[in-house]
Image (cartoon, rainbow, N blue to C red; front, side, top):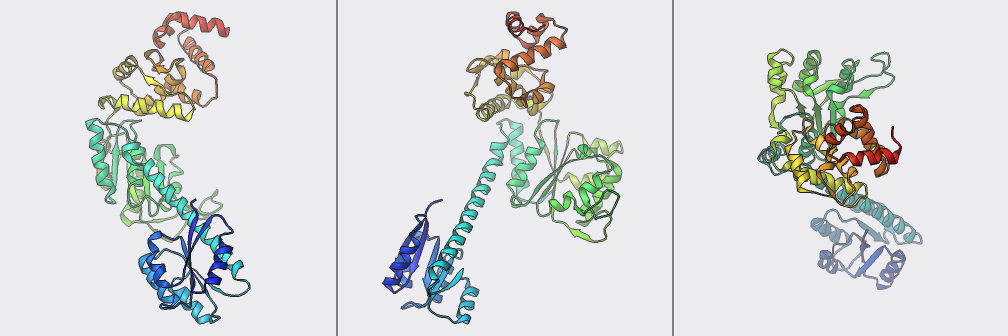
Length: 448
């Protein structure tokens, strides 16, 4: 943190000099002295972090100066330093917005040091919070979060723009792996609710018998295992955003209860009588066609229209033109950076191979394929032979292990040899590598 800029305002030059000496014993403090209120006000453009202000000043009193400072910048902490022992004056100054009131006595430097330390800690915390908010803003700026230049994704950007300006419910549909939660986060973290909680609930991952408690909470003793009171996801997200992923998997009974909570804008914990008022924005996502689910009787029509709101349809990656390459380059760059590896470029042949593949797992699968390719290459590029499909079910678990590049190669070859009955020619065809490469690895690693 930069040195704390402190103004000392006192018409007694000896006292002001003494005060400056004691304060600047800490090299983190930069002190400038002024003899009166007018010169202080004329120099406020220098943006002091705090002001030590004498109560008895010529021309304008300390109170008058403080009022004018607060008119110009209400957030500057002001410490009043005075020889007055009048408690009423001290209380009045604190009510007017003074940070502290310090008497000019033998304890003045000790009390002043404590006040300065407290203010510095608070200003440091505020700076950290502001930096964190700025970082969050950058992180979730949706043009950075959701990469692409295709017509479909540009259309999604336009709808996100509309969503962040209001509290309208948003329904996101798209195939698995298209990035529905990323869109939900982009909306929340760019909206006025960005400093409030973002709570995600995957409906399909919660057992049916637990989902009501998970969403609405419960009181102590509501059922056998309810040893303590617990707030549900609606309460956790109060003031912020509640994101329901795979909302189409919710059973009809729970849909009825959810509809009531949405309509009443309040929730009652299981086993309780008191209601909790809600101010929660809803964003829902599903890979299913909810309109078709309504026709089949699997989803309540009234809940469907409550949740429809602003629909955002995410296109599958196979319909996003050159976005495949934009995303692949981004994934390669991120993976290499996180793993302290040299940056890798995609050859034109590798790019062509990616373009021709349908990616049933969408963006999620592309990421896994690119990360595996970054491990497979022995060069400073990712070439077509390093692009391996149909192995993505093995990738995540394999990447969680810390192995050498050689060990990764061995694991992949062993996987495919086992899968294809030790037929080297078939493995070479699937991995698009020479048979000699596989034989050499088998020989070197002593594989049977």
